[in-house]
Amino acid sequence: MSAHDIHAGGAHDAHDDHHHDVGPHSTFSGYMTGFVLSVILTAIPFWLIMAKVIEGRTTAVLVLGAFAIVQILVHMYYFLHMNSKIEAGWTLLSTIFTVVFVVIALSGTLWVMFHMNANMMPHHGTPPAASTTPQP
Amino acid sequence: MSELRMNAGAAGAIEPRDYHLAEEPHTANGTALGFWLYLMSDCLIFAALFATYGVLGRSYAAGPTGADLFDLPLVAMNTAFLLLSSITFGFAMLKKQQNQVGATLGWLAVTGVLGLCFLGLELYEFSHLLHQGAGPGRSAFLSSFFTLVGTHGLHVTFGLIWLVVLMLQISKHGLTHENNRRLMCLSMFWHFLDVVWIGVFTFVYLMGVL
Image (cartoon, rainbow over all chains, first blue to last red):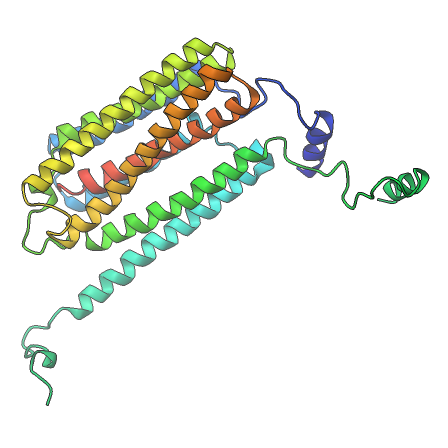
């Protein structure tokens, strides 16, 4: 990893003025593959919901989530050119860190807030909360 | 390091000493990594907004629900605009690689028009909601909705401003090294916004009407 870095840094001039050295090399077929895949991955969820194909709410949420994750991966790979090689893996590493952070933040928030809402619900059979009566 | 010292000694006390390695290892393209880190920090902002929407998205306060408000054909059209603008930006990048200034500018213009269409449709949707009395003040659901979707729209707006400025730069100076670097950053920004929109149309609109 670092050996490749040093080699790349030393082999080129510090201020090389090539036009093609900036960013990854993209290809027409790569963009088109990504585009066609994402059109399919967008059209199916919209069709599923608009035509009311799926009955159960939980099933629908899981299916939609799966489509979204796959499409995000498609965009990352074909449009953002993510792979383990660019920047000697630092880009991938920072992305993995962000994904872990996002998953913890999202699932943690939803889990905690759901339980808080559930536990704050007034129970059946018990009188309303005492806070509604003015304190002397 | 010792070699450097010896060189400095051999040249006498006239030359100022360098206290860093001249052949310091550096990544070939540090801007890409730095800009990527910025995008990841942006991703955290959107994660916080998505989490907020996840918590508040069902708190309607006896007001209208997502099923009452969301117009899915409109959202589908908006999604199509953004997806198309992603591929046209890709075409601009391909033309940049072939060093064709005019074609690059052309595809960038198409991208900008598609981005404007997206933004126009979103503003139309917002004004329609406000007209119905479903503004951000109506319920916690609508507050979080306007914050999340509005922040994305704001990003698209700034992306469009950047796009126009960059087009002026390219038409003035051509596809120089600096402009190519800026183009690469803007392309990452634009594709990233498309990625965020996948989350928006899935979690806000499609799951909102369930």
